[in-house]
Length: 89
Image (cartoon, rainbow, N blue to C red; front, side):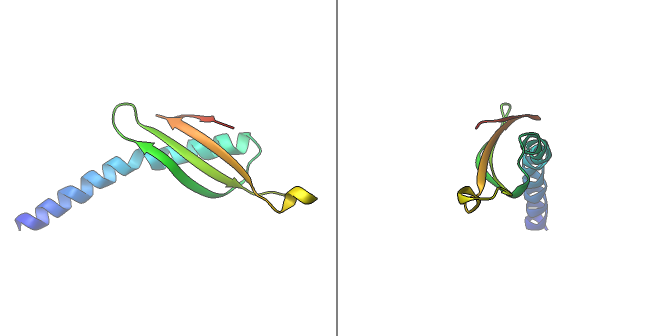
């Protein structure tokens, strides 16, 4: 019984700490769209927790350009602090 209670508490705390990254992902996606990037893949490059939580995302963008550069996808890095997100490149 005690072990089950501990596991339940652990998973509840894990869910609470995972929430900010999920909430920030929508804001980061909006910044990517504003910068002309239709995201096809989103990766978390760096994440810090605490009062000054910060997440750095790497977006792989859909590339519709024709010519020699069409083979390589466009990459975009976005950093979020709280709910404010800024494109880094």
